Length: 251
Image (cartoon, rainbow, N blue to C red; front, side, top):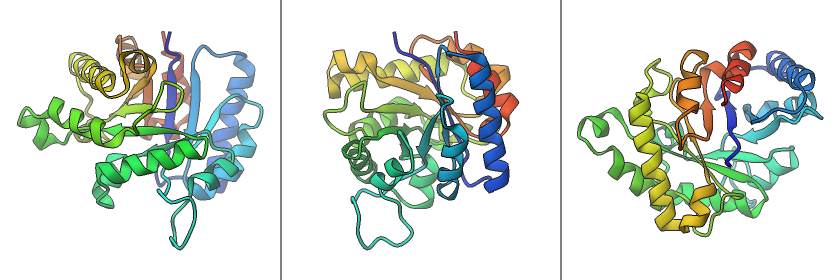
């Protein structure tokens, strides 16, 4: 049984006061609820990692980074190493988000190298894949996902060392969401490709998250799908009520 993972990607949002308050609110709810039947993860901007880590201490909510550099250390001004994230209290790091691929021209090879750096530092990379609106319109969704999985997921990954997130680019921050049938087809295809790349046994345990305007109104339907093992939540993760409701939607 794959345990659901609800990850909040705050992107470039939040200041120390608001970010700490949000994390403390969620930590308080987790303490009050006791043992949850799913995993929660917050990925704030880098300047907020330490205060958010302090606010989450003892709550069971995990901390993650939004990106890391492929190199362990060195002359890379403005970048963050995976070991630095680990030192800040992170257990996960997002790599290959479409906004990184688009804004910074990241290739599959770069994403794979970042994933390997994360794994070497003891972090679990959340490898993002997804098609654009043009690729979707051209009927290329499954081919794009296969290419990105083959190029981006570190070889030798296991269920314990990698998470994959399917985020259709056209649904990120737009309010649009893929239909349950589309999501089910994409996730089944991703698991099949992972099976060919990592082996069927490893692929069967890898958690595949859905991201793309996930909100309380559609979370239960999406999270009930067979190969959907959680959600990578953007805008809704900035509101404690919404993010908590998405987690509570886990079957």
